[in-house]
Image (tube, rainbow, N blue to C red):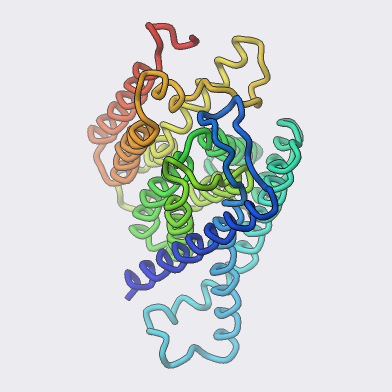
Length: 364
């Protein structure tokens, strides 16, 4: 029954995102909300924006509905048609409602910031300030923290930095059709496996919505894209993945993976993290603003090497899927197995580095 509920959540988010994206595309074209070709992405065709509205709605609306129903059913009793396997979780959902509202509020703030930036460039530092404020609010108000064994203030600082890095990683990934949404769907699936294995149905439910929303939008965004998500979508995807990667429990008592399972999110997101780190390094080395877009991303280099946009995107999907598989296994393997997972991840990153190098000169 839990599996059917998960499939229903994915399906609901997929349909909402699919229909919402179609409507957003029509609205964007009617109102002239069009993204013009820029220096930070390939392609020369003006493309409608507002896809991020559909993604956010497909996550936000089912979440609020579930929270509202849980509160009503907690007071009046669960309806007879609701399976007992789901009814037993109503008190837990009610208990987590304040945390859920904090997270959803962060989504809304970043979505609005993204919408404004899509229409009128806010500049990189103002966006970064908004990300820091939202990340700080979630970490301190919601007590969403990683590395808690290291105590304060290390845990809080690390959590804020992690959220900001992941938000920007998916913002940076939105540089070629289909990339950010597809990678988000793959990462959501891997996190879903970990959350389900740990019995975290609250986290798993959100991952179902996140994956379904990304896939529904991807129908219109896979190359050649008919609509872009804009910052209104990429900021939300990055924020939700950052938050859920912290909330997911990777280590379970009795497992041998106590010490290295904490690295599962880094392994999972190794490809987006490498792309972000390498691009920022190249911009800084060339004395450019690291937050200003350009065409130095992994995807851009694959295109310059002669790949078509679909093949470039699928190549990055495959690399992400390999590291995601390793991340899913990491909490359940022995120390030798963990070493092999880390070695595989390093190997994937090195392959990425070799593929993106031009004539042996990565900065070219």
